[in-house]
Length: 227
Image (cartoon, one colour):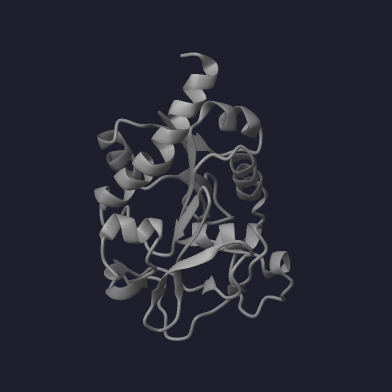
């Protein structure tokens, strides 16, 4: 099985060479190695259709930079760094149109929400980007997340300064924190969470996603190919 994964982009110092880097946290490599899944990195807008054709699913890891508010009809209120998120938008739309599973993580949930017509809170008061403390989220019954954890609430980590404001049409909220932050959304073949299950090394989460969405798509694809 092959999973496409959008690598993170970061500009360290524009005045120095080798400043722009594509990278992937080692957690993802370790988790998908254990699941015996080949990761296909996405770092260019070229050949996205071919990547979609050969892969069974997509992981959107999110960028350290923010989606520019112009993409959801607002003006910037803070001097943050922004991404031109065309690559993410194009690859998500390709996989969605092909009805292949998509998993969004942290900023990935924000990007997915904007791609499908939602908006974001540009700055959350009293939230620190590097706060990895655990907090409680309530899960919606009859959702992927509830099926994974078999509980109406779980503890997750926090590492974000923005969040979903207006939910994109056709999505449902499947996790919400005690302070009202939307932490999980789902629609058909798409699951996205605000926290970092890879940092928690949450094998149950990733294995469940592959079992429910990825293997089903893999079997259907191979059946059509006659493999």
